[in-house]
Length: 175
Image (cartoon, rainbow, N blue to C red; front, side):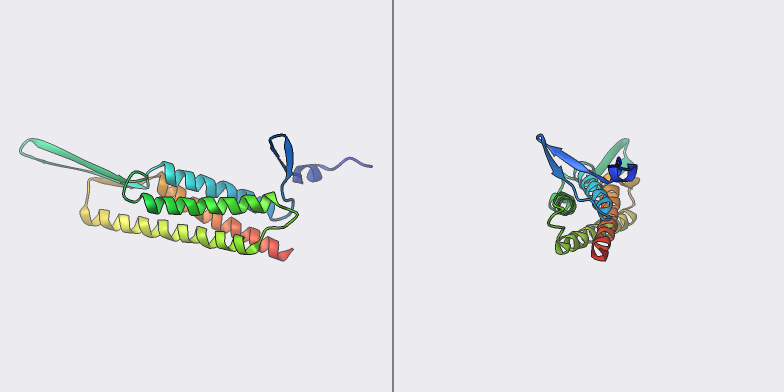
């Protein structure tokens, strides 16, 4: 028996959980699901943990300066929307993980397609939110306004998750 090649060894993936070995799907679609797992979890974490956008402004009159600032983030009235968007990205991560975790059953394409549609919906919602925010800021004309890392995490994370899930689904249907 000849020793395995580097390709054979590098293609084998395993998770160790409490001392038991759990097999991870080996195949042409698994790199896409690993990527979508990473991008969806990182995007959800950035959306939850950091601010989406912010602004600051100052007015002065009669020798008094009033500083005003605000942000859109987790501890604002937008919490339910941010929680739903983050939850949707976490669902995409869960679907990607189950696609990797149960190779003997094979991933269900319906759940992968649902996760794909969810990540597209998150992307569209974050984009519309940013456009509405920018429009309001251009109308109100504060001194400074910005889109923060929550926006970029939601935008980039959902876009990459959608692309990787679609590529994984395409690769699965081709096999």
